[in-house]
Image (tube, rainbow, N blue to C red; front, side, top):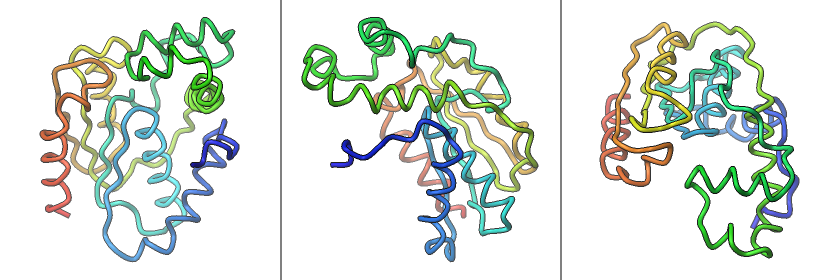
Length: 192
């Protein structure tokens, strides 16, 4: 329903808008979770709230994204010609084949996909105070783009405890281990 809205291509305006939307709900304990690009967004939002002395998350759960201080090991794809961009997206196994094979769907979804990749690929880490919240990181053991080692580096971004949980699978391991992941998130929420 929101495909007609302009997509965020840079992280800072997105974080500012999210913080504004979240503010009325910060009067209760909460946990932030994000997979892939969502992990980066959740982290930056948590940092922003902490820096502004607003109630911070009780726990940050990141999944399938390298620690933010690490450089992106892959060349950017957001500005590739359409055919090459679609080929690269297809290699990731995260976009349904029905979309990739349908020109009308592609025309509808490509601007958003490009914007998402641009947001991540142009992200530059700025050194920040580590989070006071604990961090739990989920990693796919066969993720070709984001290694377990890259995920384990999230430990540098908290002064609290850090836990790494590995799941068999590639970048989209969350689709194959939904129940186990929901169970882990449930345990974290119960402990808040």
